[in-house]
Image (tube, rainbow, N blue to C red; front, side, top):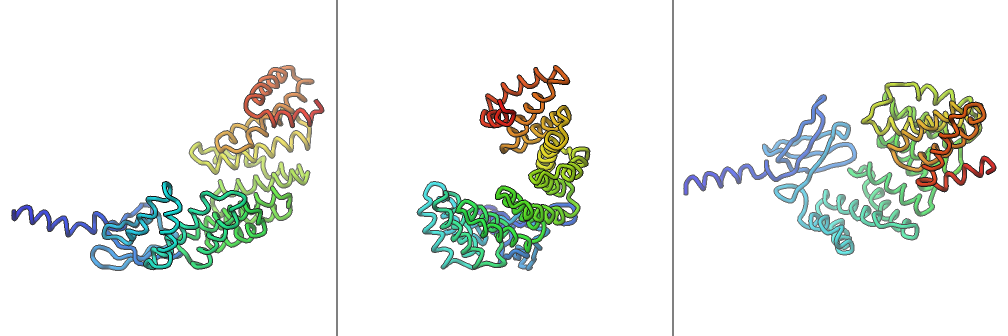
Length: 357
């Protein structure tokens, strides 16, 4: 019995260590994890918590890796935990619980509940309900101007604004992301540029992509991505020489060919597409354009989206025009046509229309 009581006492002492909150952060180049803590406060700037020894610690946002809150000796309320568990199966019930917790819970749980409520509305939003979802996200942003979840909330708000056709609102939201610091300043400017180019506002897009390149700092991949999109704007403005001068060095930079880097693939997919357009439309050098488009399609395949279809269709056009000087392009054109018919028939139809066929 004495041995059993000793084990029980030891487990009781260890309970906070085993079951309380967890905070992970960078300490130099290594990830440090503090287990058995209780988060006491958080904001966009930092997270504060008490250790199992009763000491108060804080971790700055720039060093923070993750925060995991629990109901067992931790800071997560049972009510909020219950709402989280039923968000998928019973969204209406979860919404009611979250709404109540956002008004009656502890400071941490109020904020967490209000953000989760915004996420819940946004997750099921369509064009008709997007403005209501945006209002829910905006409620969090307005209530917590230095909130812990701002890095997720602002991009979510912009997506809801775009879905609800509030483009001016989305523009402002992307600009607001700059105040969060790196990498959100880069992400916001990049997203703003992509919004502006889709709206045909090329000067505004170019300015946003140049800001994104500036905010990229020493991150070569993000800078190359922003610069490649600047090239895409210049092609839209038919400034082919300027566009080629930007993207051609990117396609030759071997340091951007990291197979594990999505940002490298994203930069190269656009860079090769732009280079293909410069060579095809700007200089009518069809064989070189074909090679660029095929590389663009290759990198686009890794990142998804519709750029792969565009590049393959343009490669088909380049092969068709190159047949006059090199017969091998006839077979390439036929293979591309077969692939496009199977995967991108609309892109093929548009390419044929451009060729007058």
